[in-house]
Length: 452
Image (tube, rainbow, N blue to C red; front, side, top):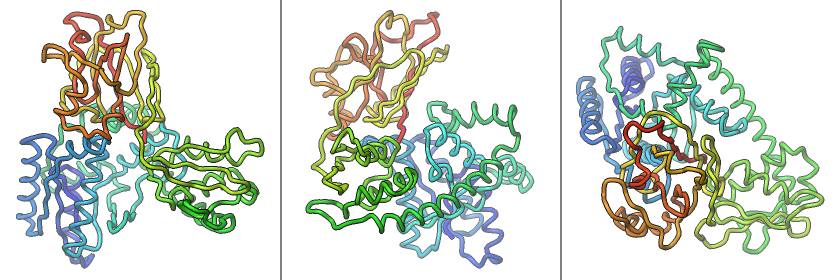
């Protein structure tokens, strides 16, 4: 059994429990620790802490260092997504190389509650609300979560009773991450106002929905076999009969279309509500369109009674320019982002020097806005920024080159603009003239985060 250990409370308790039960469970315990290299010396101290813990317990210690920030920048994804992908690759590699049957992670009931809230806020269905499963498989990686029904408070009590030490990750208090806002701002209100045992209720609801999802997916798999037809030339998968598919309820149609897209290789990040609804529109008797352009360079077309899926050559995403309400929020589905603005006395300086790294947050001077509108948009040739604290203006292209942002990722970086000028490059810096003046009014807070 490979135990994923960060050095935090959850993973330390998990390791201690599994190590104590190893003879009863008849398993050999090993530890995997990924150093994300995100917090400098603190990340190295976490690694040394876990290694020392393994020496004390006399269990194998497997470690890897990964430049997660560089990975996020290169792939144009959020820091959280890059870290998760790096961990999964590491666990899978270690399991395969060392012969471990599964990787155990320290997810708790609180993690389940947070995940369900976050997914519910995005409008997910039963698949997403099933959230964290006790057991799951992703390729060759088999994950088990023995603590998923245990509260974080219970683990604190256990650790104190057993005299266990653990590491605290300072990023867990950073509200720029949506999970931290749920953990520190949303869940306490729910527990105080609605249900003090909400985490337990969330786990129960997740299990019910996960079982429902498995049943409905099995039914959908049967339906797709009934409605499939021969595979047209250049199509990614066999076509679907529009007439046959329309004989089933809309809920079944949605599920069949999701399976169809997944079988073709459409990434999970693109299997969202908007994409499926575009496909449903093609099934309508009085369809508004015979073709739907989908994310990831996919195109679905209505050809007679057949629904056909093809993939075109990769292209840059379409340019966009969307007004951002102040205060308020907007979603840019084409870019897979959510922009939120509000007023608060806090001043956040976004100076990671990694353009496009999301989630990102910054504070700007609201007086600069005046009666003008704030926009989120793609970059254009000739765009310039006067970066705070550097002096002078620079072309965004030069900033991207210096930061080693791949050409393919530049068109995917959202920019905040006002009055024809760049206000903020998320993950990098705000414009000098938009800096918050000392003693001024509450700053305008801006948060950009992925919604995929």
